[in-house]
Length: 132
Image 1 (cartoon, helix red, strand yellow):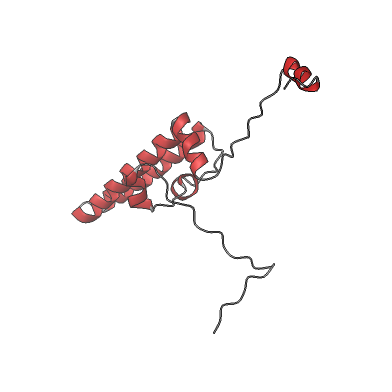
Image 2 (tube, rainbow, N blue to C red; image 1 turned 30 degrees about the vertical axis):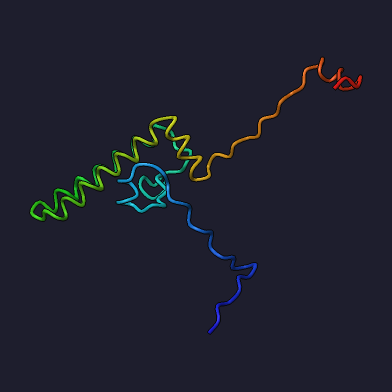
């Protein structure tokens, strides 16, 4: 059986994003192409710091409950503690303005605007007069 070609009604899925060059613990726990906004905190990429705080607290509480439920399982507790560390690392990225800008750019949320150099009137006049 051959694979059907993508149709207009059924386009191929987009390629996965490239691995992010951020905290390796996040990639280790959530995978190298995790979207911190959606996959960890379940918020939109334009979420305010207040919304991110609430989301972090919610996720942290969920992880703490998991930790409490597995009090006797050392391996599972270690895995959950690693997840808590990764969640905190992700939170630190989104709460730091510069790190968040870099992250947003890395996942394609920020498109750099081209910079235009404007000519001075003097330079325009010199061009018109054929000096440049």
